[in-house]
Every structure is written in C-alpha cells, then in structure tokens.
Length: 131
Picture: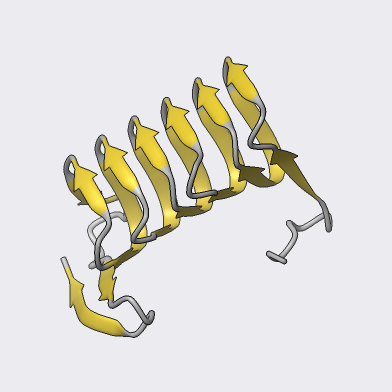
C-alpha cells in the first residue's frame, strides 16, 4: 500500500469512474479511472490503465498511465507504462526505461541544477544528470 498523505488519508478514483471537471485534493490522490480536467493535489499516484486529459500540479507524482496535458511536480516519477503528451516541469525527475513522453522537459527550480535520473526496468539508475 502506498504511503498516506500528511493527514493519514488518501482519496481513490476507481477504474470504473469517469470524471469531467477539475479535481483538487489536499492529500494523496490515487487515480485508476479517467479524468477530463485539471488535477491539483499534494501527491498523485496514477494507475497503468488510468487516463488524465488535463494539467497535473502536485508536490509529488508517480505516473503509470496516459496523461495528455502539462505536468508540474516537485518530485516526479514516470514509470515505464506511462505515455505523456505535454510539457513536464519538475525539481527532481525519474524516468523508467520504456516510458513515452512527447513534450519538453524543464526544471522548475530557480536557477539551481535539477536532478534527472533514468531508471532501468529493475529500478536501478542508469543515468544521472543535472541540467
């Protein structure tokens, strides 16, 4: 089970749920269903079969499904099953081998080098760089 947010709770959007509209959550949000709208939350965990059509803004995000929209996250993990179409802004970024991203990457930090790491299928870093 994933770690819970600061208040010890999280919200789940099940695989059978389709939401059309923006979502805001103050804790961790688990998305297994489909969302057409922007998401703002403390932490986002996206399932492999999930689809998000809209922007994502979170302190941390772990993406495994399809995202069509911009992403802004302090700590971002893009898993090998993820397909992202849109620009990605981050402070720390990990991308597993096999992930598909069609967009631009840009650090969101203020002039500081932002760490980037690419992970192999077993999760071990294969490349680490700072922009």
